[in-house]
Image 1 (cartoon, rainbow, N blue to C red):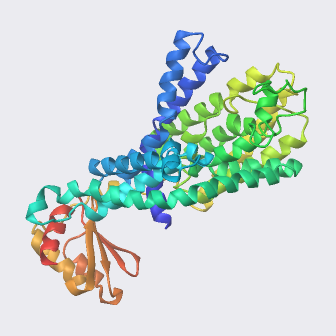
Image 2: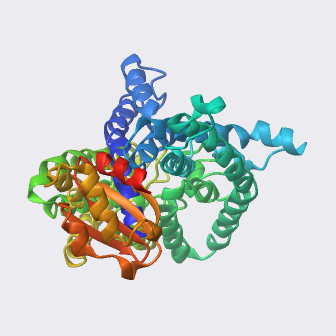
Length: 480
C-alpha cells in the first residue's frame, strides 16, 4: 500500500510543479489590485487570470498527472482515459444532472464536484487502472479496430458510470457529515479552533476542506468568521478581537512554517537531486509565504510520506489553537499569506497583527526541526529523496540479448507457466503474479542475465530487466 501511495505521490509531481508560479501570479495580481482582483488594473487582471487558469483547473492537471504516472509505461492513452472518466463524473454528478435524475433540487454537495482535486485523483486512478488492465485486449476480427489501447477509453467509460453511481450516494454523506462535524466543534473554544485547523489540512487531499471552511468562514451556520472580519456578506464590521480566531493561526503556518519545512526537505534531499528539489520547494515556499497557497508544497509530499503530512496537519491545529488563546487576530480574503497579512492590519477587527512574525519564527523553527528529524530518522520520502530505482534500472544492460532465451529461463525460475497468473511490464521491469511463491528460484531467474529480482508480496514477483523489458515480455507472453 505504501509503495502505491508513493507512486501516486510521484505521479503528482509533474502537475504540482505547475502550481507555484500560478499562485505567485495570482498573489501579485491581488496585491496590485486587492479590491478588484484585476477589475481596476489591466496588468493585475492578466496576472490574476493567468494564475487562476491553473489554480482553478488543478483537478484537470491532477487527472493527467495521475493517469500517466500510475500507468505501467507512462503512455498518453492513460491520460485520455483519465479525462474521459473526469468529464463523465463531473457531468453525471453536476447539480443540473442530479436534479434531472431525481426530480428535485440537488444536494449542495454536488456543487463541489466540478474542479475537486479528489475527484481528479480518483478519475486519474480509474483511467490508469483501466489502461494497465486492458491496453493489450484482443477483440474478434469484426471489432479489431477497438482492440488494444483503443479499448481503454470504452472500458473506462463503463467503469466510471459505476463509480459515479457510488459517488452519487457517498458524496453527499461525506459533505453533510463534515458540515455537521464543523458545527459541533465550533462550540468548544480554542480546542475547537485547533481541531478545525487539523482537519482543514487533513482534508486537503480529498478536496473536502471547503465543506469545513464553509462552516467557519462563511454563512453556513452563522459563524461567518471571514465575513464579519471584513464586513462582508451583509455583516457589520466586527471590532478588534471579536472575530478572526478561525483564520489567525494559518498565517504563521503559511508564511513561515511551510518555508521552514521546505528548507528541511531541501537540506535532506539527495545531493544529486538538491537542484531539482530546490526549484520545486523554493517556488512552493515563496508561493505559500506571499499568497498562502500551500497546495504546491503539500501535494509534493502528502502521498510520498503520509505520516509526515499528518504531522503537518497536527502542527497546524496546535498553532491555530494557540493563536486563538493569544491576543492576536488577523484575517484573509484569499489565504493566510504575506499579502493578506499586510492588507488586514488596518482593519477594525485586526488585533496585534505584528505578533504573527515572532509566532511565525517559532513555528518555522518547529517545522524545520520536526520535519528534518523525522525525515532523517524514519528515512521518509520527500522531494529529492525518492527511490532511484527507475533511473538506475534504465541504465541496466541485459547481459543476454537472446530475448527468447531470457524469457524461457525467467519463466522456468518462476516455476513454469502453470505458476504464473498474470504478466505485465513497466519501463524496466517484468511484473508477474504467481500462485505458489515456494516454486520461485531467484538464482535461476538471475542466471538469465537480468539485474535483479524483487518480491513485494507472496504473490508478486518483479524482474528487473532494463529498458529492453518489452522484448522479453513479448517473448514470455508467447510462451504463456
